Length: 362
Image 1 (cartoon, rainbow, N blue to C red):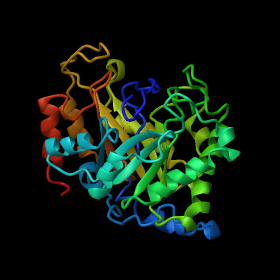
Image 2 (image 1 turned 45 degrees about the vertical axis):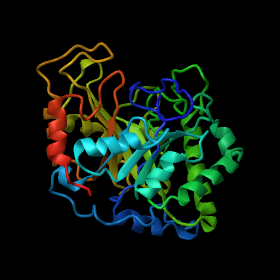
Image 3 (image 1 turned 60 degrees about the horizontal axis):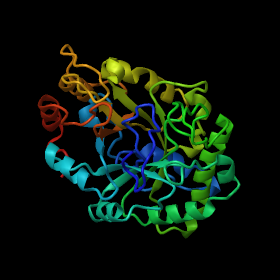
Image 4 (image 1 turned 90 degrees about the horizontal axis):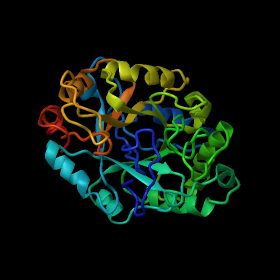
């Protein structure tokens, strides 16, 4: 995998799509999150503190105009974020939201973190509970306080980042590609043996942050719970849900084209969107990883071309969506793995993305 300074195993259901990422904080979490967080009482932490109101009342417009757009550009933030800057130049816009992957072997990236701070970027961090990309953090140890020193170090450094930090902790638990899933198919051991352990660990990392807040320089950290588009193991996504009181953002990772399967953006989003909205909160919904395979060529996975499909048309359909009004942010997964998820996987796909996004952020 690519975002870590140590080699990473292929832990993911979309094996090319999930290096250890970090999180892009959102300019569009919306006022309702701040209002909701303000009611948390004496623990009283605005976990969504400082988030702006620019995504309120966006209903009725298409996704392109109402959503905020960010990106993971392989291989940021390690060793640096130059790939993100290259993507910006290619599309002709600034992506003010960086998406990263990071394990617990790293408190905060060095050069990449400095570049993000200097450029005024918010970050979305896929915070993966392994020490080195291979050794899982046992959630029973986490709840027992055995990783408190690391948590304090991470939160302190994140709070020193001048932008927003959204922590996407233990993402895609309803898949089978990560050791924090009870149905993990790897051989390196698991973080959890039950969904109850997952929920307890998730709540612990948020509660620890809330307790630490009086000692931090700013309240810029919020928390994102993220699922994959369909359950792949014995436990459902809902069984992993830690509760609306500890989740600021609900999210899904969306990929079109695995194994030649193809679905329109509308139909691909329908089921996970319905499940997230049914959880009872009013949080914004984000797409924290978005990719579409390139059907004009043979992929690294061996999937053959399908001339009846068009990634450029699929991307345009995505931008034109007027459904799903709670989707407030979308992060491209700009990387080539078993499938080519890059925005420039073909000249036609690049042209659509440039036409839609060029000049949007400056």
